Image 1 (cartoon, rainbow, N blue to C red):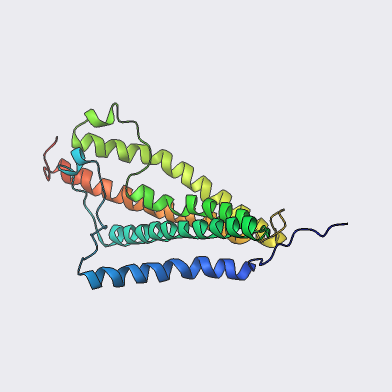
Image 2: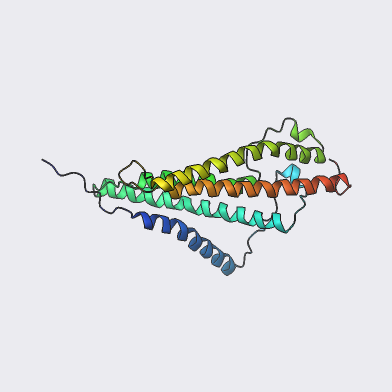
Length: 232
């Protein structure tokens, strides 16, 4: 009778969550230090990034609320970007341990796909803020500036229906998972409720990013109507 495989080091659940919380902050701090050392100021990301043909003519109106939400959205985007490094490190560790030491892990794959799922949701606010979501421009691009902004306001109705459903469903999933102390079915058996809490957090971030965008659209629409900009 042969012994089973030696799984070696198993990442503790508490260390997984602590690492996800602390690691991006350390990397962001390190990146800021490097930029200051090189004398290269970080580019301003408070404004909305637009395609080149629109960026030259559309200047969205902002206020303190929208600028604050935009900064939070950018911060969540940086967080998710640095999280990707964790998957690279984890899979590198898996390859080394499996093929050099015959000690496959029981946690790397699960830790990584949970990470990607949380990234997908939390990065949604940053994607919305940077107008990175898919949009069909067949009609949109032919409209005058005020018409484009007006269409954005109109389509936001559908956005809020979707995002409110997402937030409500995520809140239910989180509550049920927490009460049941739900865990994954894999060997690592990490608790699911923090993951579903990230679903709720991601939905709330997208909701506020959408409110900020709608606010800017309404302010800009009014400004265009008062002759604040040329009508394309």
